[in-house]
Length: 65
Image (tube, rainbow, N blue to C red; front, side, top):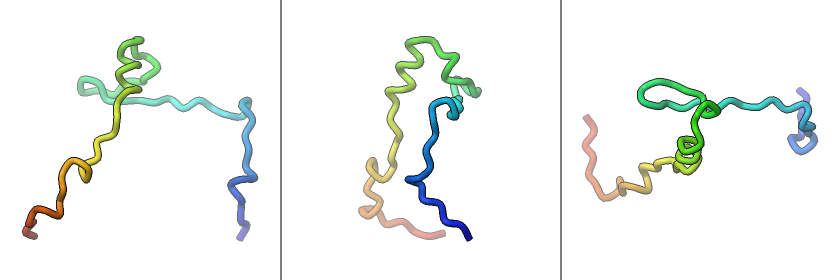
């Protein structure tokens, strides 16, 4: 088996390929690159919701069904 050290892997900018980001808007998928200036700003200011930070599960008695 060959082991590759990730620190040895380098790409020049000419070797890179842009990644197209899609998101769900009003019930359908759409590429972010097609958004207008305001919608792009709103998209990039979003934060991921973390349920564990919102609710302390330890404080509830959850019955297994």
